[in-house]
Image (cartoon, rainbow, N blue to C red; front, top):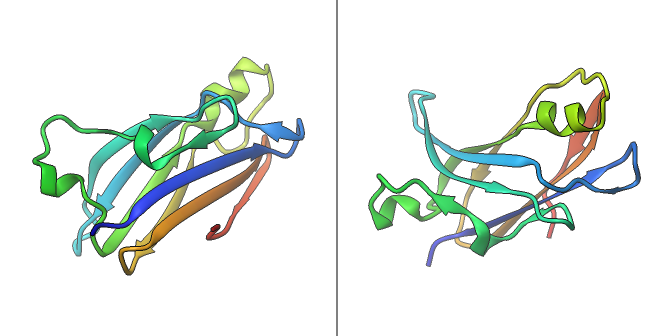
Length: 122
């Protein structure tokens, strides 16, 4: 059984979930080449759930599974803060992480226009 992935973004400036942020999932190979696997958008609660990822249509089914290896999540923070008319220091946030087994991986992002932090959630 493959691993599953979710994410949650909280806007620490506004003190609420960050809705409608585009998120892209890449698989990174041993040569540091990244391949787009899927994309999603945070819902009104700032979440991308495991079943809401849109996998690239050119990939075969086995390529859409989260097997062990290295991945990145890219968050389009520029568009989000542009909507709020805030000057942003980080136009995108890239989180690089490793899937080591077939468990569930939750990658939260705490976000403001001038900083961010992340951790492995549950």
